[in-house]
Image (cartoon, rainbow, N blue to C red):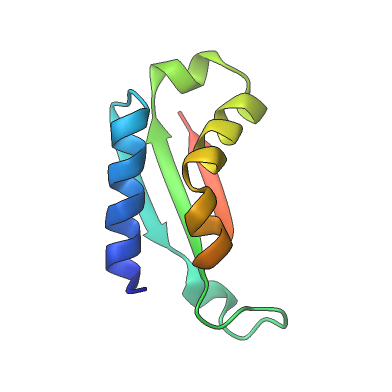
Length: 86
């Protein structure tokens, strides 16, 4: 899948299911390009979310929410996911 389409789909899913003030998704795949174990066709993403709801719950629980929403993408298109919640 095209990285821009993937990012747009992820953003749409999160915005639809999590009350948030801000979201930024960055493709960080270039950092890992030559690492062993880097899966061709899978990307490394960094997601910054500003959400008072997610900030009120534990980091583990907030990450579980995001991982559950992105289950399909994690299986098919994402090798690594960094989630930052403010």
